[in-house]
Length: 83
Length: 147
Image (tube, rainbow over all chains, first blue to last red; front, side, top):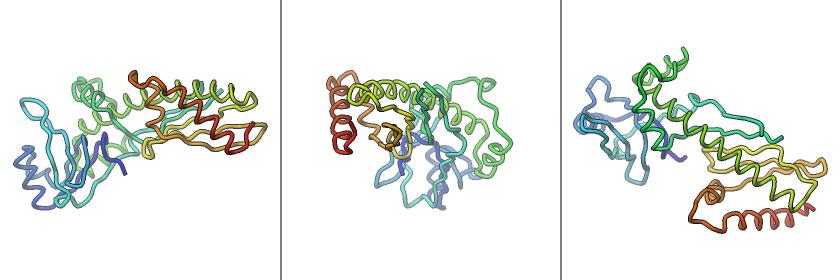
C-alpha cells in the first residue's frame, strides 16, 4: 500500500498524541485522530505536511506512535471518459 | 472509441497546495455521507473538502494522461497488428499500473503496464520512451502469438 500523496486519518497512541500536540500545535481534544497529507512513508514512519502560522512544516510521525491509518478512498469517484 | 478511467485516489503536492489556497466558498460541497465520515474521523469538514478538491484536480490530470497514452498505444498497436483495437485503458493508482483491454479478431486480451513506463513518455529527459513502448508492444504480441 502506497501512502505517499494520500490524505490520511492517523490514529495515534498516547505518546503520538502528546507529540503532535507539541509539534503540530493540534489541540488535545482533536489529537487522537489527525488528518494529514503524506509526503513520504518509510521504515521510520510517515512524513506529513502541517501548516503553521509561518507556512508549511514537515513532521515525522513514527510508526510506533501510530495505531491505525484510514485512507478515505471512497471520497474520490472513479473518473472515466470515452476517447 | 476507447474507454479510459482512473481509479483510486491520489493528490499531487502541487494540487494539494492549490487546494489549501482555494477560497472556502469555492470548495466542493460534502455529501451527507462524507460529512458523517468527517465527523466520525474527527476531520474538520474544511480539511476534508480541500483533500477532495486536491484529489479531483490530480484525477483530472491523470485522466488526461491516460487519454494521451491510450491514443499513442492505439497507434502503436495498430502499426503492429491492424486488426487489434484498444477497448479500454484504466489507470489503477493503487497498483501503479495501467490495465489495458485489447481486442484482436474478436478475442479480448488483458494487458497491463507499469505506470512508470508511461510516465517516461511525459518526461522530457527520456528520449527513447516511445521506441521502448513500441518494442514492448512487439515483444508482448509476439509472445502471445498475436498477429
